[in-house]
Image 1 (cartoon, rainbow, N blue to C red):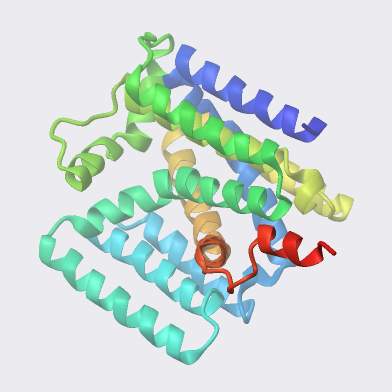
Image 2: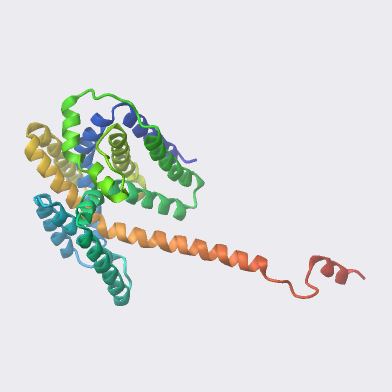
Length: 329
């Protein structure tokens, strides 16, 4: 196991332990302190790669949409904005032909119609895409894709460890008490709607932001941020001019300070900043999903081909015993 993999596992275990001990406090501190640093550094990294879009100008439209969405009070319209942005980004970044784009668009229209008929589905989508889907599902996609590309058993074990940590939190939730009441209240303001959204999605009544769900969110958010920071040597997000790095650091610190100075203003700003980085990452997320799907397809075809080869009948006289008999004088 490489040193980077050991550090990776150590940070995962640290996030897991902290999520068990102080879930409410960790969730807020991770979002307010680690979050802005992650948002600004990733936006900088995406900018240097044209946001994985055919034209950088499209990113401006995504930024405008993110800021507008942060001000939308209607949950259904907010969800529709998130869904539409994800589909458009997938069409632009992950499809390879006009036919593929049209097929994706038709599927998206059909799913949107189903969600519209169900009444609350767009609201559920709007809650889950910027939270659990972004910080947990897409993190898992990138980890799995990275392990596959590297052919690394150690990185594959990190994926397994991540899933085990989530399972442990869900099956054996912590019993930690709230130590800083104001942090718990603030966490409820940010993430209190995640529980009801999961209730509607899975048909499990009564889900709320209890210790179990808070611990899960604290773990996946903290690890999501730490996983990004530890990749500095891999994806080179820190390889930028010193002036820009200093600007990113100052903006991150200022965002955190703004929250503690004025809770209401800081809340709105962090939400808009978070949504901006999420929407700008949609093209990369879509591309990663396509690449992971292609990798899974290659693996399935490889297994099927191997089974076909081993099951094919040997030509008459082609058995090892017959070959040995032919070689004898």
